[in-house]
Length: 320
Image (cartoon, rainbow, N blue to C red; front, side):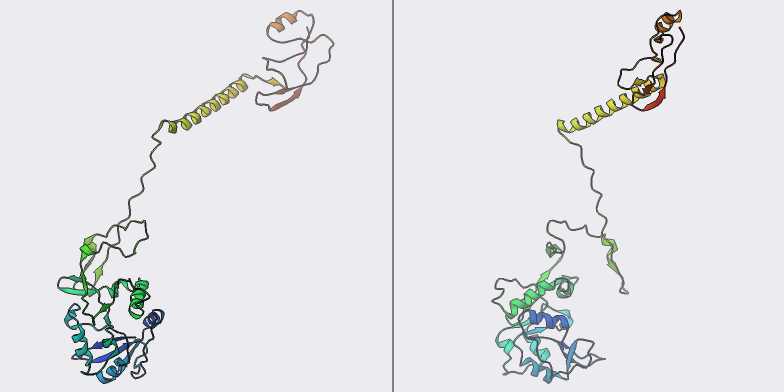
């Protein structure tokens, strides 16, 4: 298997016949089930360009006679990809008549221009646009060519068979409905950037605008059924009860109401009983119990309604 290129002579350069030695192509050929060609007859004059340079058309022809599958990467005359045919290949590579070339006998001569974009009278091949990020698609094309039984139903995307007279597919913007796995399944493609920001000037500089930011997501809408308001009403009711309890506590503390530990609250000081004395009826009417004369008062603990001890003290004894 060989990827070959012919560049015609120009005013500043002589004609060249090259065999690609790019690492990615050698790896793809091997993984697709093929064997990269032995280009020892065409020495590598420049190890940095990843191509073997044949000295002339005769040296290239000697290599072509050994190949079962050929992929022609040559740029066509005038950029006419669609018009490039087997006759074009034979003329450019100067094949001899009456010589058996295995790749022609087996009808396995290909190019990488199966998909073309045509605009303003010019043609561009999709291979140099999408084959690099979609190497798996290119590898599948190559495997279907080298081992047809492995992928009998595969529809080639990049490789066009010149030997069978296959024509390229000419595409325009209306044919680009399939993002070709540019987005994940279930996702939506981002909006296209503004056309005004995607222009190229005469000096070769291009401006590419970034896609606009997607709109912010809408806030969730409230529940539409009657059951949705019930938790809110319960929460408000609990809040009201808590506020009422807090206000009652504050009011009781401000009025000086205290609770004896373990007993119900009473107003004023709780003093021991006092029997007799002129002041007893008057004090009793004010809620003050008077201890009997001579009785020893007991120490008592006074607690706020919240249960916080204020300390212990002996009740005040009023002499009746």
